[in-house]
Image 1 (cartoon, one colour):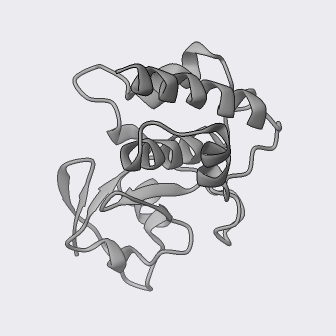
Image 2: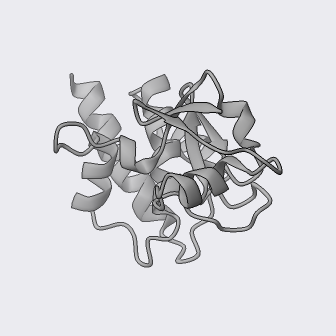
Length: 153
């Protein structure tokens, strides 16, 4: 099967109906996307499929055919991090960082949908991503700083 991941075309094997997460990690060596719960409850495995945050752990790889998949590795462009990555790093929000890829992917989709968000909209938009270290207040604060920049113009 042909698949486009991070603006590159790949041919992958889908015998046995593997999940998109398995294909990304095992066939394409894109290990930034994490396996968390295997039930789409934690958000660690989220990738963007045509711009929508999608749990790769329960998504059959075949779903991604003819669609654009973006992983955490694909957010950096020409050596420059995505603004969401930058603000979360600047604010040093993560402790263990296991949730970081899924949090960032979700935040990118959220900010692309609407740049100027209230804190409650950030909280609602980030729902479905679990941080084992409970850094939620720091994540919301950092994303709020980014949205304030967007509001300022």
